[in-house]
Length: 226
Image (cartoon, rainbow, N blue to C red; front, side, top):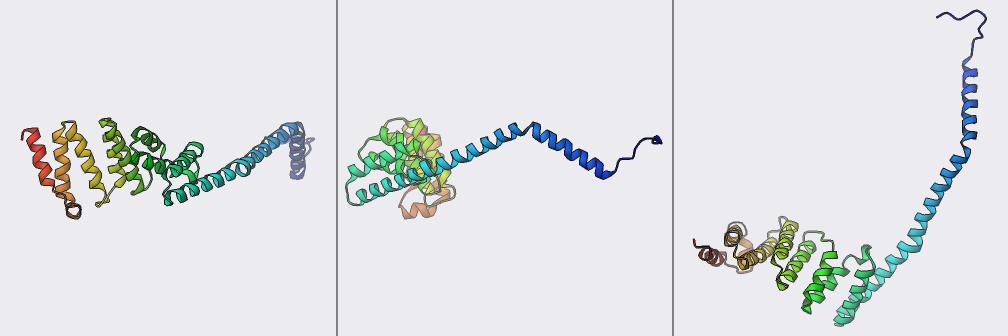
């Protein structure tokens, strides 16, 4: 459409100045909201800093000191004092230095035949890695076996087997424990498959531990009426 003759021509500079003026007016109108937003951000930063310096860091130091004390007590043969300190750390902290406290407490409780308490601490423990992780779940399974909770024991041994992954010198140990529980539950066909798997795929392990799968295969077959 053609411009009217009397209509003033707007320059780019004028348009920019008008946009800036509009923006400045909006900024002025919304200034209090911007200030509140800045205050909110500043408050969050202060809270984070307070958490890090007043809570997290001191707790890290406390947990590190307490678990170090428990380790020394254990090395000195004072298992009761060590257990008490491991329990304190496990109950009070969930940070990095405190991670192994539930496992250490559970091991000492298991040695004292306090299987229920040991299981409670193992349930708090986060299994990680293909060595300590599987071992913790195997110990949990042992606790459940001693409490005659065989279904829970099977679940724990299954977890140990899963965490052991391809560790051929570790995994069969948990498989044997699982097979033992299956035998107690009279699930002989499942038991048989495990021993056959060990015979076929874990020969070196059977030699190291002088384990005879054939003996247990025959036992499972006889129990299953095969």
